[in-house]
Image (cartoon, rainbow over all chains, first blue to last red; front, side, top):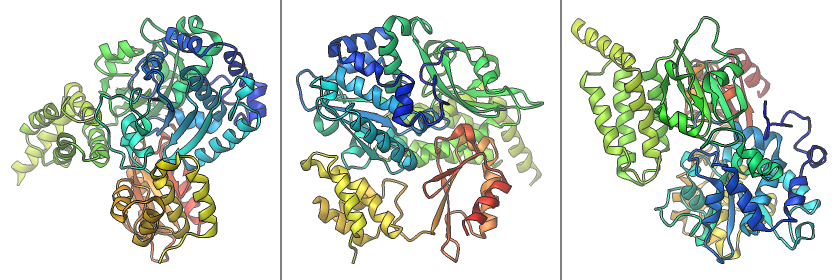
Length: 419
Length: 158
C-alpha cells in the first residue's frame, strides 16, 4: 500500500520537529533549495497533482497563474475544513503539522512568496496551538524567517483563526474573511492568482494539497505521476464516515475501486447492505450501491454522475432514508448560505421547507417536480458554488432513490384520506 | 464600559503583528475572539472598543461579528456544548443523543442551564466525521459519543 502523506502518521510525537526530522523531515526542503524556484514549479506541474480541497484544479498550473513580477504576493493555506464528511486535514494538522509547514515552504519558494497565512477554521483552536508550536520550532531551526538555510529566501508564516462559517472554505470568501470582512465570496475573475489577499497575487491551496507537495518534490514528478490514473495522479486521503464498521481516514492510490475503500473501513455493519454513498462530501451527488465499484478518481466518479470533491466518502446502509438525510443536508446549506445572492439565499430555504414537508408526511406528489424546478433555478445561477452544492444531494436523491420520496408521499396521501 | 485586560492586550499585540500595519482590519476576528475569551461573550461595548482599536465603526464590527457563528453576543454558560448534527453524525443517531443531552441538562437546545454552567447548541459539521457522533465543549472535541459517555463527560464538568 503506497503511503505518502500518511507514511509516518502514527509515529508517536511526529508533531515534534525532532521526530519529524528523524523520519526524513525537512530533507526535501534542503534539496529543493539547491534548485531554482522554476524547477520546483515544473516538478509540481509535471506531477499532475490536483487540488485536494474539492475543485481538483491542477496545482502547478494554479501556481503558474500568479501575476508576474507583482510583489508582495501571498500564500494562503486553506485549513477551513468544513465540507460535511471531511476530516482528513484535521488529522494532518493534529499529527503532522511539520509536513504542512514543509509543503508551504516549498510552495512559497516555487512561487517567490515571502508571507504565508494558514487560515484555520475557528473550531480547530486546539490544532492552531499545535501548528503555532510547530511554527516556532521551524523558526528555531532556520526553516522559516530570513535567509532560510542560507538560500537568501525569506518566509514568514502566520496563523489566522476563522470563527465559524462554512462559506469561508471557498477561496475568495476565505480571503475576505482574512482581510477582516464578512466571509462573502468575491466575483471571479479576477482570480486570487491575479488579485487575491489585499489585492495582491495569492496562491490558495488546501492543507492536503500543500502536504502532497512534499512527496511530489521528494520523489520527483515521474514517480508521483506513475501512481493513479491518466487524469488523477498520486494518492488521495479519503475520509470514510457513516454506516461502516471502522470509519477513518485512508490514503489510497487514485483509481482504487470505491468498494475497496469501504472494505478498508471494515465494510458494512452486521446484517446491513449498502444503499447509497456520497463520494466527495455533501456537496456532490449521491450514488446508488450499484456504482460502488467505480474507481475512486476524478474522471471515473464524474462519469458515474458524481464528483471526488474533498474526498469524503459518506456511506449509508439500508437503514437510511435518503429523504431524511437530504433534509439534514438541505438544512446545512440553508444555514450556511451567506445571503449575498438571491437564488442561493431563497433557494436553499425553499428546498429545506419542501423537503421538510415531504419528510414529515405532509408532502404532495407535485413536490418532487417543484424541488427539481427550484434546483434548476439555482443551477449555475448562484454567485458561488454553494448553490450548486446545495442542489446536488436533492437532484441525485430524486434520480437514484425516488422510491424513498414516493414512499413518504404515499404515506402522506393515505394519512390525508384517513382524515 | 469594556476594557481589555492585560492578558488580552498581550494577545492583541501578538495578533496585530501578523498583518501589514495598514491592514489591521484583518485582526478583527482575533479581537472579537479575545474579547469573548475575556468576558464570555462580545458585548456592544466590546464591539465599540474593537472598532476604536481598528479604526472601524461599531456597526461594521457588528456586521462582521454577526456573520460568524462562534461569537456570542449574549452571556452563555461556563461550558458551551456544540453538538454536531450534520450528515455523518446524523447517520449515527446524533438526534437521540442530542435529545438525551438536553434532557439530562433539563433545557431545550439553544438554552443555558439555570446555574449558568451549560449552554447547549446545534452545530454543523465539526470535521471529525470518522469518529462520529461528535460534540465540542468549549475548545475540546469529544468523539464516538454514546449516552453513557455523554453522562460521564457532563458529570465530570460539574
